[in-house]
Image (cartoon, rainbow, N blue to C red; front, side, top):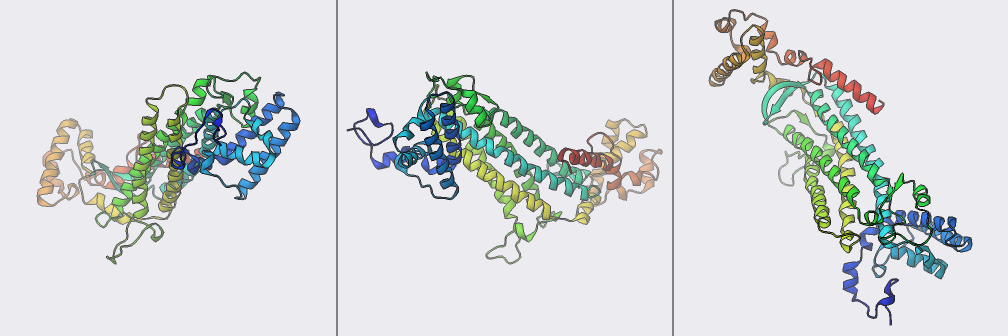
Length: 460
């Protein structure tokens, strides 16, 4: 007695239910049901086109698959562990609907090229959505930057006050990071836009199929040139997970600064109540939980990348059951990054900037030290000497609680008689920002250029 499995012809014993459950993937790969039906329709249309199947049989299968699409859309399809995966479930349901002719659907096809096709289609359908959500975030960044070109804040290195910058300039730094993220996902489309269908199990098929026909039906740009590669390749998933990890790293860095800057010690920004939570015991608390969650979810996405790299690293060609582990991480990553982007976009859009607090932080520190060193250098003092002079002035200021702009002119004159009243203008943080004209700098004119270019890129 053979087993009831669709592939059970050479087997004489059925496996235990718990073993079937362990090997089954239907609990998660049912997310590809739309793609499986889409791929099957393209395949049977090709079988009809090449006359591998006669028109009567092919049309019957096509009609049955189209009915299943409607049932799936209306939530009427149910799947079972007994049929292992989405492919066997669909075929089993189709067989019940149209009879044994459904068995002809799998002519010249294997589950190996079928699942690879489903996975390509799944990611191909979702990459444009991810890019679209990223662009929405970019638009909010540009809007926020335009509102804050002239908002002065401390720029940091080593999380220490470094030099005054425009808050708009700070925001546009993240615009550029997300722009590169979009470029990476766009390039990912190139490797996702390949059709594995027709590679069969690993060696192709003896049937006179037309792989380009199915590729065209599924709107793939090209087909895999090698059948072994077609069924075993998951590079495009790795590429996506890598891109997603870099994206989440960018979001996490942004979130880290938001978390710091809405704290009592910084108070540079205030988050909307909508993106904050309270404490169950401390009435005064307003916690940046959404930012913390996004920061935390970055580890989840990084883990999926490392997991798939580890799964693939020792696999011989071609298909191995290990590849069943390629999907859950992909599905979860998409499910993680899209809401994270949407939440972050809303959070950034609604936060309030405390301009006075930011500016105050640059007026009671030594972030203007470089301005004084540059001023001295412009008066003819070698920069290294100017650097040492300013360093000593900073040390003295930290000891007596004064700032560089508090030093009397007569004290400056002792350093160099060339120093004049204009030094105090140069020491203002707003002047320090305004005077920077190098390309890509924090100068107001340069930040406005960045924003103008970004608007052109986004068609705003």
